[in-house]
Length: 389
Image 1 (cartoon, helix red, strand yellow):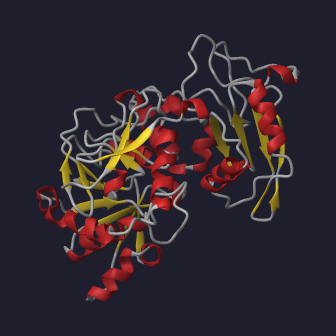
Image 2 (cartoon, rainbow, N blue to C red):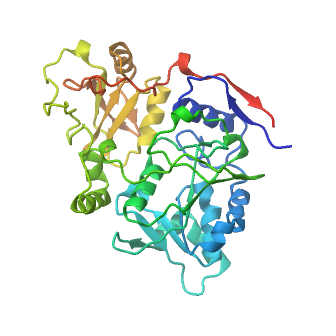
Image 3 (spheres, rainbow, N blue to C red):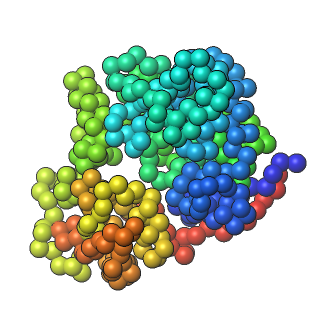
């Protein structure tokens, strides 16, 4: 008998609903190791090493010489399997700040214990060599972490979009092809039904799901990202991720449209006609809060956790941590007002932050474009139950 997994009955489920229910279930059933709690993380689930070991049994694993594995703790066993097979292990640089990849180079004559050290997060730091965009990388297998995944291959990460971005960047630098296989490793309870309408053009889908008890071939028909969608990025993202600037210059040189999204470096929203929103707008028309005093090194996941604890999760979060700020869009003035009250005297890790209406920052919808679902409200929480199969 296969293990139990979640089943969503509600048509209105959002990605955030699914993440929250999976995280809650893992915590409630003590299914994870450190770090805890698993909220806002790729869960380091119990049985991860066993599930990761199955990657070495995949036919596609034997055909590849270069494997990209995400740096998440539960994927440590997958990184070890790559090193033990004497294949080239590529790991994304943390938050893509210093490039796209690092190649893990074990010490000469490395023992099994040495390889185990190299597969850990500390080993990734100590034994890595940067890989430049000019390097002729050919990745035939990609291993990513997930918060939830469906048997159809639809995947939901922790919400920061790095796995999707990394894949799109690899497409742009011709490091992967349509034949590249994508694998995710999760606990059985993370295999859930995900409505197809939640999947977007930039979302990465998977070909195989490895769990402690199963190997699932998804035969996913949804196309993987075909490259970077520049209109989903803004100048602030390019500032925080320099490798994007290089890729953009290369694509622009080749004649591609590399127009960015609507937010400029100051977080202002540019209207379709080119003008910015009126800086003197009445607070009653503002749905967005400005969060200032964001300390250097704060992770966006830490901010999300604090917002969640105060019941002030926004519909959209525009992160500008490099500039010491963030914008919280609630899509509705009353919700923004309630969040403003809830976030007074906000302090994270001993750092006090300032919260105020973002004057001149109207709702971040473009005129004439329907508002996308994404807010977390009680009415949108799906009816979840356990289903056995």
